[in-house]
Length: 111
Length: 114
Image (cartoon, rainbow over all chains, first blue to last red):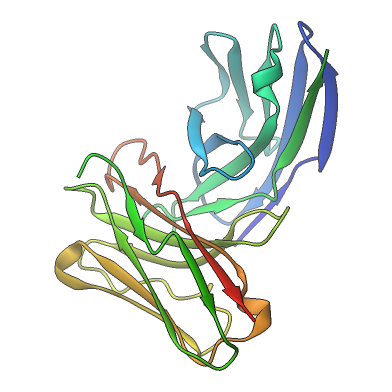
């Protein structure tokens, strides 16, 4: 099974940088995803890591260390619209790719 | 279709009634998931369909919950004898079943059990 931990809440200032951490324990790993979910809306895909290292996509970057069971999502040049919940999800390689989600980190961006 | 469609978007029912929630995934996506999300909480896995394989039902909370996926496309989640604790948003997602297998979510069905 999967055990995924991420902080419940974070607050940051507009224009700043914030790092959201995710640690996981898994019986079989086949990729880690970050999704963004605005209040009252469905989650949308942000990033995917399957190999160690940093994946950069505009203002957002995601890092993975498989040996440490650790990932982070880095958001640069924060904007008010980045206020949302950020969900870490791990895909299982023992069950044809089932994804299990953490409880999410609610990020509040303040002026 | 272009996206994942779910219906109804909102359902209010009385305790003890049965409800059916429908999900129409993206055409060609072989994998389909149902998750449940209570207010302010994360996504709770319910059931997973992948192609013609037997579904993974390990997340269904009780035998009152069941799901079917007909013809490898549309799925229906049925909750029998609803309880107040079943109140939540039920999210359906589909994915290609290969490659990165990114999930695309529907807008959800909000269930309120009175």
